[in-house]
Amino acid sequence: MHAKGNAMDWTNIESGWKEYQVNAKNRWTKLTNELLEATNGKRESLAARVQETYGLTMEAAEQQVADWQSRQEVKPALVAAAPK
Image (tube, rainbow, N blue to C red; front, top):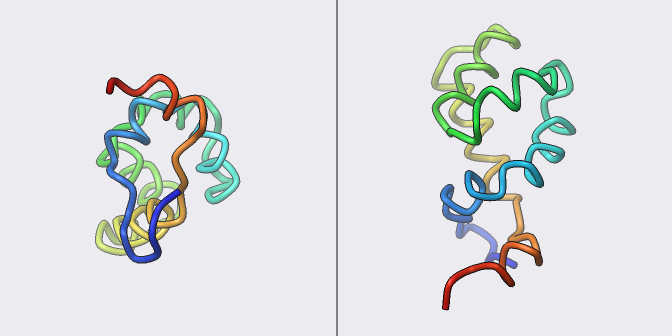
């Protein structure tokens, strides 16, 4: 779980991209599974795909990604697998 206003570290999203990809697909329904997979969970790549697909400025795409990131929660499987 994350505190409101305290965005999850992107490395958690990147390392668990297979799980977070479902949430990304729900947020950006025009992005195909193939496009999402091709980002490999890289933030810059996701923002670029959002920009291209939705015809946004890079600033607007980055803001959407940041907003989405702030709503993500740590997946239980990732917490269990995290090094102690």
